[in-house]
Each structure stands twice: as structure tokens, then as C-alpha cells.
Amino acid sequence: MKIGVLTVLFSQQPLEKTLDYVAEAGLQAVELGCGNYPGNAHCDPDALLGSAAKRKALLDALKSRGLIISGLSCHGNPLHPNAKIAREHHEVHRQTVELAEKLGVARVINFSGCPGDSPRAKYPNWVTCPWPPDYSEILAWQWEEKVIPYWKEEARFAQKRKVKLCFEMHPGFVVYNPETLLRLRQACGPVIGANFDPSHLFWQGMDPVAAIRELAGAIFHFHAKDCRIDPINTERNGVLDAKPYSDEINRSWIFRTVGYGHDAAVWRDIISTLRLVGYDWVLSIEHEDSLMSLDEGFKKAVSFLQSLIIEEKPGAMWWA
Image (cartoon, one colour):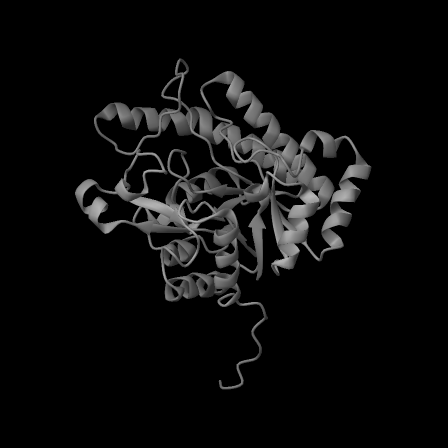
């Protein structure tokens, strides 16, 4: 395995400076944002698709620092009921897949998206319960009329370009847990898998180790991000929490840098189980810890993961 970082964290500084900083920290990989929610400060598909020279310059800049690209990210909602938003997010997704092919990158990271409740909707509608029956009807319509048809076509588009689609299981979108990820994969094909981010599973009450085992063979990329559940607030209000992320003391949970939500034993189990199911790619740091500065949160994540990561291939079982 390797350690990398989603460079959106460093969007305020130039790519070259970011790559120097990342390499000096001892990382081996970067995940680059290509637009939609992550922005495209370090990797603009428009510019790169139109210029072989710019693509070569990017790859040369990475190679000279001993870095690889773990994936290209374009997290968005191409199923948004607002046609303008859906079209923009779709176009960025397509461009990102095309750019991945040209750069020799095998993974594009995205959200599954979330439609509205009908063709007349204005906003996404994330269904979390089956009753009253309206909700079950909405959910069936979303999957049958919007989700599966759209991603079937995009799966074909990606497969032709030898690119895997890595969906982050995130509440607010139709794929938010292993069950919904596997439902989409079964409907649209094995080119669809997970960008496994434990933080979103922690706050929903899941055990990431159990989830990793459930998704064996379907984990294509990994985000190293933690989550701290506040037991006092959760006991009063549960885990569904719409308060601003900045209201840390009153929230049921907040994102933390790795090691500050769950201890090393938990993360050792996560990393070991990844190896158990055959994942041997990058642990990509996504720093969204509102209690730490950009620099401190990143450095603590690097140090923590460097002490836990399994880098070498296992040898023969000399004892058996």
C-alpha cells in the first residue's frame, strides 16, 4: 500500500508547490480534483484535454518527485433535478473519465448523485425510510427511472476507456452504504466500485471492517478520514445532524484527522482487513478536521498512517 493525499486541501497554492510539500512529507501519491464540488485548482480537464504538452508536463512534474496519481476526483451530482447543475456535473464527470484515460489513470472518484422525487422536482430528495408509502414510491422511481439508466450508460463509457468508477458512500446520495453500492454495481457492472471512506460509515453506525469484508473485490480507492462520535449529543439526538460543521460542540459527530476519532487499534484492523480482501493501492488522506489547521491535520495524518501502513508483500508462511 501507499499513502497519498487529496490535494484539494492545498487548492490555495500552486500545483508545483503542493507536489514539493507532499513529496517532502514522504507521500507516494496524489488524488487530484477535476471539478464539481472539489474544484479543479490543480487539474483542469479543459486545459489538459486540449494539450498533450500540458499533460506531459503534469506527468513529468509528478515523476520528478516520485509521485503517482491514485485517482481523479469529480465528486458531484449528475442526477440533480436542476437540469443546469446535472448537465454541468455530467460534463465534468465525462471530461474526468476522458482525462484519466489520457493520463493512464485507472480510477475516477465521484458520488452516485441523488435525483429529486419526480420529473418536476427542484431539489434532490434523499429517502431514508419506507413509510409513509410515498417514500418507497419515490425511491423506486429514483432507482428505476434515473439512477440505474444513467450509471449504466456511464459504466459503458468508462469501461471503453479502461477506467473504474469509484463511488464514495455518502449520506445525501443514493449510494451511502455497502448495500446500495452493491445494488448499483449489480445493475451496472463491475466497473463500478467503492471509494471507501470510513468516516461516513462511522457516523451512520457501521463497522468499517465489516463493510470492507462485505465489499471484497469492489473497493477501488480509499480515503483516510476519521470521524468522532459525540456520545452526549448522540444519546440526546441520534446521528442525523443538520447543524453546521462549525458548531462542533453541539454536533452529534464531526470529521477528524485519522487517529483522532478512533485509535490505532481500529485503524490497524481497517488496514489489515483491506489487505485481507486484496486492496493494495493508496490510502488517500482527506483532511476535513475543523479542530486542526491544514498543516497540522495533514502532518498528524501522515505520521499516524506511516506507523500503521503495510507496505511490503507478505512472504511465505515459514511457520506452516
